[in-house]
Image 1: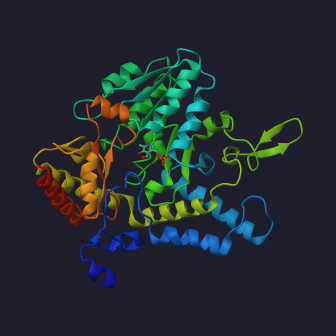
Image 2: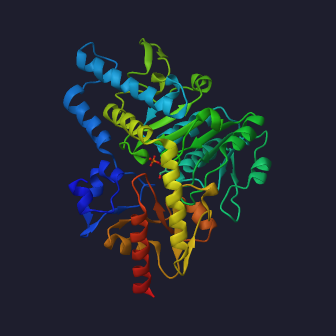
Length: 412
Ligand SMILES: Cc1ncc(COP(=O)(O)O)c(C=O)c1O
């Protein structure tokens, strides 16, 4: 057993891969349960980026010299690694700054040729990133937005979805996993409904990619977007997957170096996919870090990881349900949910809960979680969110349980 493991007996082996988890907060071992916001980074990701900057740093796609060639090879390889991870092909993977940027691009590109009265279908559980870009386009182009409602057990009402997705619908854009409720949505069925009326299906996979095996063909989606930083990779990089046939039809969303084939004083033509959508110097070190994060997840085994997180979610739900005055806001069992668990605590504001837990070294998130319409719909000002990751353990949850009890005792 390593010195660290002896000092911190509850830290299971996997936690040792994440240097930040060895930190103490307020004199206590950190219990990091805010992974829905961003995850911690393993050594392999940090050292891959460090290696790039200390050994291979150069710009890509523009140098004959060795460093540039190495950087280009590593950057291009990152596209292939991400493509393999979600069952896509190399040309279908575009690197962006994150989920938000990917969704902004899609909202603009896919509504450009729509007519007033055409409709976009979203759901009531969307993050602002999958809502505001569509709202803005709808306002500018006089489009309608329809929302698939949620049921009493916090799932999408698929009967209503069937009624809402009509010949007027041009795009359906939904979260794979809700960042508030933890609900996992039935994407293959939504894809069928969208395709039946000739609409495209976009999946916001920001919360699901770190926890579930993703295969874009099994999901049946046309576009899928996610962020590197929520899946053990760096900030500043995200992914936009699109079916090759559809990407070929779309115009670039930024113009400049790197994305062109030929430029004259009069016109320009576009590069092949995926470079047509990657103008300017891309996030090279970040792509290399993201590739290392995918390597880390793959080495752990996505199925193994899912089983671990499901068991821990079940344990968390069970422990939390023992606390008087605590209400889970989301599906009560692991059948239709992932490891994002929100709750309210009678008589305590979520910000107070977060602060009291922070005193015990526990990082959770309190507030509206960038889903104001959903929280309003539920009649809640905010919720406290526990979001789990690969390195969380039963001991983390036991510590959380004790700290919530302590908070309840202080306030009641
Ligand atoms: C479901 C969902 N979509 C989109 C986003 C936005 O991600 P980013 O801030 O990395 O662009 C988040 C972030 O919390 C999210 O949870």
